[in-house]
Image (cartoon, rainbow, N blue to C red):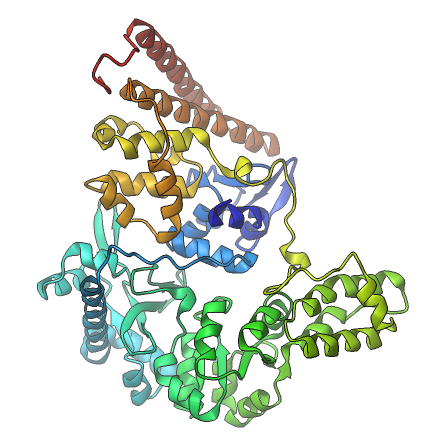
Length: 594
């Protein structure tokens, strides 16, 4: 099973969609107001059995869980995969582009640094940067902090950065590869328009990417660079280049969530603070800390601390070889708030940070009644896999005794439990990570043979690209297949298409390219695939329209008639293709594709 399928299998689209809009059951479906546009009547449907979604309102589009995240957060496929992977406890391997040499990477570093200096100049000197300067003043950031972190501002323009950097000798392709511009079917444009910009640097101080914040209430609030040959978000810690000496000197690192948390901490003298950039901390980030210190403190609110403690604490401890601690923040406060209000309170919270495994026991057992066998069983089911996951036998025994004492159950009885045996080394398997069996497992549930066959034809026979004009991206329900199709249609050749993809899709791309296919009548085979995908897409829309109509009295006659007309056209196309196939010599003597 590929890592993409693994993430899909561990992710429930209903849970993800429910974070963006309130959903209610409508028969076998979930329904709510569309999270992408304003509406009074819900036209947004989630289909748990197919793990898909569709908006019948202004969006008139849909897809899988990846397309949902991509559309809502304004991020690329690779970043959506990593975001969901972190949530599901799936480690997404970092893909290295071996064909990109050191000189090409150096060009990307230089382009990023040139962009960073340009943004910083606009923030400090341009009239357009006044709004960003006012925001910085309101947040209490000093001129020194702005300079140290090289904060910047991107103009509210479609191509000012692109024009500036191309004038410096960088090509549009290089700017796209660096993630500085976004490329669409209609052209390219500056990615971080009208935002306060936070340059992200690696431990050596090289600018690898950017984070950017809106200056109003528009969404998404934060926008990050996509994965590039020089920017690996899962392995980068914001502020590490400025914090590394303080971490070494004080033998301690503190991890927070946001850019401004880091800047405020450094401004007040707490220069051992870094950020995971708004997502759960990864094993790679902890490994980067381990090179500087083994003493790690997370500054989190109670909800975030509970999530880290019960799903990731053991993995962190196994990497560091020692305990990880958590500083619990006051309700409704983030580190930026606490430090600005009282630096003394922040210092006390860090000094009194609680071991994360201790917090795990307290968090899981809160509200349980240990006078009942049921709640004792719940505690054992949730906590014993965590404890058994610890590689340090002394610490494992310590927490097993704590659990034994708290529950009034002899330690050897816990050891004798067969139901909750040790899952093995590394990250433990928790209840939240258990996979719900739906109708199938592995690739059988998530793959689409017709989509993959169609893509394989195109990748192996790029001369057919002109014949694929009727093949719409919406016909691909799987986002990874849609990514490959879009990259292929924009690229000059198959090799260039692969380079334009996030590394997480390469495995699928290479598998499709190696697929064994008949060598005759390839043009007819592609035509057949396009017709079948179109039919599948339309039939899916018909079924989903029925769900909408069944849930409320909606006037959908015109759309129903249009869908019916399109389906009839598909039937005619299929019939026409069948007749042509009967008249052809299919022994391979004719030129393929004609």
